[in-house]
Amino acid sequence: KALTRAKLRISRFAPMKPQRLLSTTVAIIAEESNPALRFIPQCEGVEFLVGNNGDVLAKDPKILDTEAFIYIVPGSVEALSAAWKTARNPKWVHSFYTGIDALSGFSQESLMKGQTLTNAKGAYSPSLAEWVMTSCLYFNKQIQRCQANREQKVWDKFVMDTLYGKTIGFVGYGHIAQTSAKLAKAFGMRVLALRKNDNKETPFADMVFKMEERSKMLSECDFVVCSLPATPSTANFLGQDEFRAMPSNSVLISIGRGVAIDEIALDQALEQKSIAGAALDVFREEPLPANSPLWRHDNVLLTAHNADFTGDYCMRGWDVWKANWEAFKAGNAFVTPVAHPSEGY
Image 1 (cartoon, helix red, strand yellow):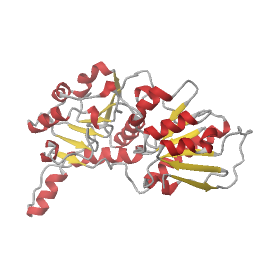
Image 2 (image 1 turned 180 degrees about the vertical axis):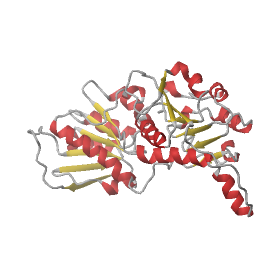
Image 3 (image 1 turned 90 degrees about the vertical axis):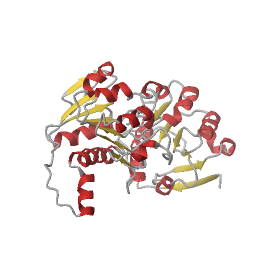
């Protein structure tokens, strides 16, 4: 079906102050097969209008009074735009995922003053932070060597390294990076942060660098974690010059968006062993093509953009939406507003 409706209820909620009068319809733009739809939360008095066809949504009379929208990748942005333009007074659209690059065009063309875009900030940070530390340990403890020794029945009593005292640098220092930094500190690591706004609070960071100081920071790192979003200013942010600045024993860990990494330059750095290795969960093109040279490197840990695809993935995403929904009902500030929607973060 192009359009479905689900009437769901939850236990009574006693607000601390009178609630605003709102439409009870929340429009969800998503493919009908999206697994997140199986976990739509129960919300008293709310009718979720689910669709992925702009013409059908725009003709539904309930869209006229809809104020709240949810967009779930890879839903149709055109359908969202059509429904948004049809609504008399649209106020809020929520991105079910943290990255909002799919909505950059929508944000520039459709979001007006007083209208808000929120995202799933924080929902998937714990799992991504675990993957960061897994990557650090994978290279630090030479897991690939251990596996090869077992397969070849080799008793190889090599000197085992530790993370304690090592330096980990974060390119971008948002929620994912800060959650990862907290774990890194528990291992006794030195934490460096490179961020656009160096005046923001930087918990767990021992030193903060400005964007133009990237080479200086990279030169001090044993591990470099890139969690940058996809924006025009972050395209190929880490390239040939940056890989040359990294020590030869350092490892790149990429968990943000693949476009932030110059994959041609990375392939060369891995081939020439100018860096020790890379742990990659995101790529410029996904799925990663079979002819990508990144597949051929022994010094690469590669996963299919599933570092945060956990058993509770969908529920965690809905938890963030529900927190924003409660704030919206009560007329309070949103929990995860996107500061610069048109810029992609």
